[in-house]
Structures are given as C-alpha cells and as structure tokens.
Image (tube, rainbow, N blue to C red):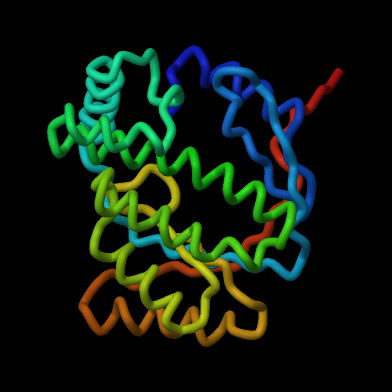
Length: 221
C-alpha cells in the first residue's frame, strides 16, 4: 500500500520509466527509492483475469492500514518494510492474532516479490506459479481481502491447468489473474466459468492479457 505523497511520485516515475512490451515492471522499492527493474516474460505468457463484479468493502483498507501501523509501532519499526521473515516469531509473541496476520502478509508478500524477481531472472515465468498461489493464500487467510468467488476462480483455474493464479487489484472482490499456457486457455476459461456457474455465482468476464508498453506522458504542442 502506498501513502498518498509516495503515490504521486510513483505514478510520475512509472509514466517516465514504464514497462516495455512483454516485460514485467518491478516497483517494489518505488515508494521509497523509485528504483525499478524490468524482467522479460515473453509472448508465450498468457494471463487470465476473472472479474466477479463484487463491491469493494467500505473501510476495509483503512482498518488494515491501521493494523499494519499498529504492528510496526509495537515492533519498534517505522514501517513493516524494515522487517524480514526472521522477525515473524518475535512478532507473533507480542502482537494480537489479527495484527500479526496482517504483518505476516506484508512481510511475506515483500519476500515473495523478491523471490519472483529472482525466479523470473533465472528460471523464467513458468516457474512463478507457486509464488502466485502462496500470495493468494496470504491475501485470503492473513489479510482477509479475498471473497468466495475469487477463491473458486483461482482454484478452478489451477485445477484445469493454470501454472498459478491469485487475487489481483484492491481485494474484497474484483478480479483474479492466472498464468495460463496458450494451449490450455480455452479449457481453463471454460472450467472457471463452469465452477462459478455451478455455485450460482456471477458469470465471469474472462479475457487474455499480456505485458505491454506501460503508461507514458503524451507530450503535445
């Protein structure tokens, strides 16, 4: 989550240095340093996004931000970025269960982003599926921002052959994204639709996306 002042700087930075076609832009450090890296994923990568059209929960992120700030204060750090996975046993000992789970999500998600960057650079995009699934489980169980429709879509996509899948966007509904082999696209899309329809959940809007040129400032005149 970005603080308002950092957000403006990061948006300007991404406009200036946005990703290139078939590359993923990593801005993990953007809010503090504006450092960025690009990692090629290639045209063989196909993503599936399932929009469940659920409403965003009012005030949900305000509560989670407050929990994260409380956790950082009780652990004696300015932000949770100062913590690593090695700090989690101490955090569990001093924090309430809810605040600890929020902290654990942020700390492990930061670690997963670093692991994903390393994996993209060494093994390529087909090797990040488990990291996507771990991320979804953390958002679902620790940050409590998933909904049943998204969980069904993620599980159905993986069962049908997706390499990985996870919630994306703001949470509390919205969309999931899956890493899908080209040859499995139709089967996976059909499986996700069937899984949701069989549970009387909203019919998803499913489409293929791939990394493309990022946002840029259009200088006219």
